[in-house]
Amino acid sequence: MASKRAAFSEMSESCESCQHETPHSVSVELKTESADAENAEFSREPYRVSECTVCGETETRRMNNA
Image (cartoon, rainbow, N blue to C red; front, side, top):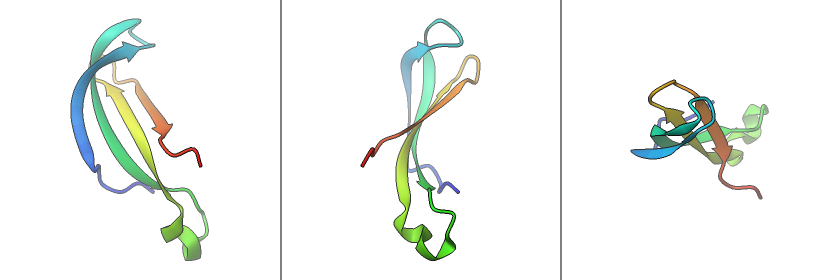
């Protein structure tokens, strides 16, 4: 489960699908990684979400690799 987007901006990034630099919508989401509801509040991690505004391709990357 992801929370509402905490940050939003548009940037130019390389898109693997389009094969060139395109505008992307970039945001940060907190996602719960634990399936156990009892400990879910301790398992939220930030993810960077980048979506190409041309083709719609989305890339999600965990920001904290601890």
